[in-house]
Image (cartoon, rainbow, N blue to C red; front, side):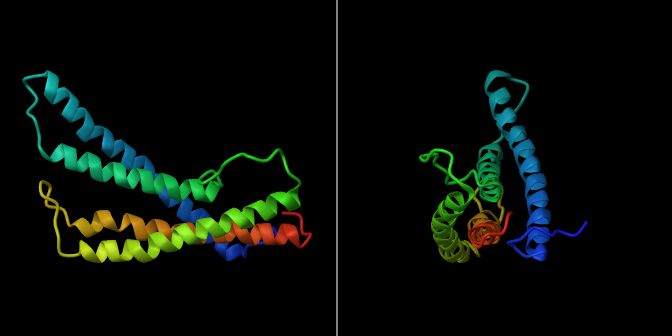
Length: 170
């Protein structure tokens, strides 16, 4: 089914749709995996037959980081992240203007996450976590990945807003 909506190119929409689907799947897995170490921590405190594992705290922290970052990526895609409802319901043209203005700020945040997130990841390239002995760069990569994904998702939203301002019905 060809995408004939004005605004963002069909290829960008297709890439973003597939990426959003993959991110949603990873978010579901991340939250599901998060439940396991947290449950082990809780049950080990109150029962004597479940040993108290040390690695569970670190694994829970890592899953939480990825859950938050993946959720933030999807929220930018859906336009629900960094949103404050201050104005009453606006016309489509005015909503497009607000989208472009707020989109500029999101792009700045995306650039910060991408640029300094990459430095943050490079800092951790030869380090490992203390308990699980996982390479820390795997955890730190969440920041530049989020920045790159935000750039893609917000670009689509802003191109749609530009098409609305030019008079095309999105």
